[in-house]
Image (cartoon, rainbow, N blue to C red):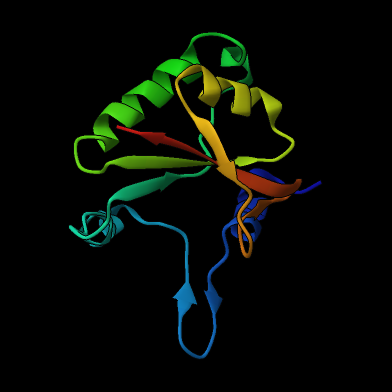
Length: 124
């Protein structure tokens, strides 16, 4: 069986093509990512996967985490879109509890390892 040190490069490899190279995020990437995310023309932000330890599932932690992210996001955008797996009913219900409404199923690249995803939107 492989140890964590052997598996880590397989989970986040560096991939190189003719035009771009994809690599794992590094601490010094923040300024460049922040500049793109702070584009003044953007009026919405998309939130994908958020993770909680299993010991924190089913309680109040997820709601608080989402409320904190929303308060921060709404300081600069008018709409937040959560991308949630179509079969992840627990996360769908958690977003609905804080005001999210299903906004449709995207076409194209949005899908999880377990299938397709749905958009849930929250407006200010």
